[in-house]
Length: 156
Image 1: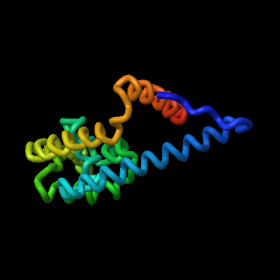
Image 2 (image 1 turned 90 degrees about the vertical axis):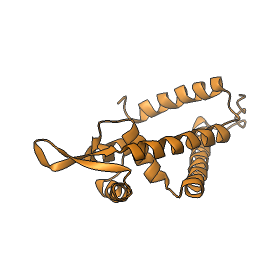
Image 3 (image 1 turned 90 degrees about the horizontal axis):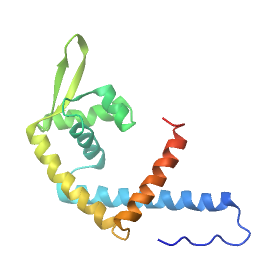
């Protein structure tokens, strides 16, 4: 991957601003494509997919507050999605022993199967969208973005 040379006389901050705008445009474009694909192929949404993806990584389940934290959204945003997933038999709420107010949200076998199908399609879409990058380029960009995210999060 070649780097374009900055315009003579441009400041580093101008180049960083251009980079930010490109990253934003790329992110929004990828999200729009994923949203359209999920809607068309599975009559689903990206927030639903994100909830299922989080639960797939936590097989024992997550409390609603933990799920919200993983997704970096409010409890209110997650509650409606989880309610619909429960109604469809894709997730269950399980009481937390010793805490009557809390419940764990966990995927059902049906939810796991549905998510596995969607996740495979999602991976294919990402491969298609980012197919112009070699595996090495993707790894290098990923590592650099991780460094930037770490500096943004203050090393967290």
